[in-house]
Length: 189
Image 1 (cartoon, rainbow, N blue to C red):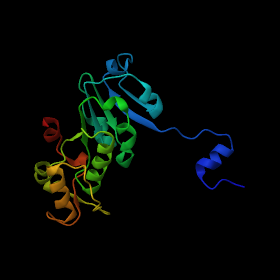
Image 2 (cartoon, one colour):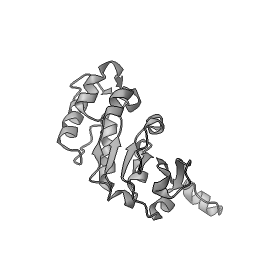
Image 3 (tube, rainbow, N blue to C red):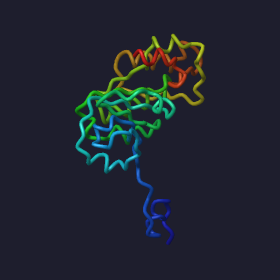
């Protein structure tokens, strides 16, 4: 019979499945890469096997912001790709370093933060606070399909803001996409 799943069909033909990868920008010294090489997409398993210890890491939800943030000396910036953030968050070598997560200020942004904390309980959110949201009122958009899932891994301030978003405290289904945050505001934080 014909396999029911795409992966099963691919295997039945003897073809390799597309590997999961993590795209990251980095200080070349962190990964032992030549000077001048500052970005790569690496298979998750291969990246997992590396023995690296960055000074800190930042996981960023959206690509344009991932490409724009500066990479501090000794650090890595990882593209979370929305709900695919499990891939960078699963890297064991991130468990022992300070990790920041920056996502959209909307219900799904907090949902992704919650997922990242399943892998990295110590992760801290950045620019996902009430002050940032309210300072950018003129840049708000509307979230087309908000969630109201229980997110017990949020801290007290994150949970309060998530509740505000779920209950439409500031308006119906509001969101602040991270690429709409004023760049001077973001860099200062």
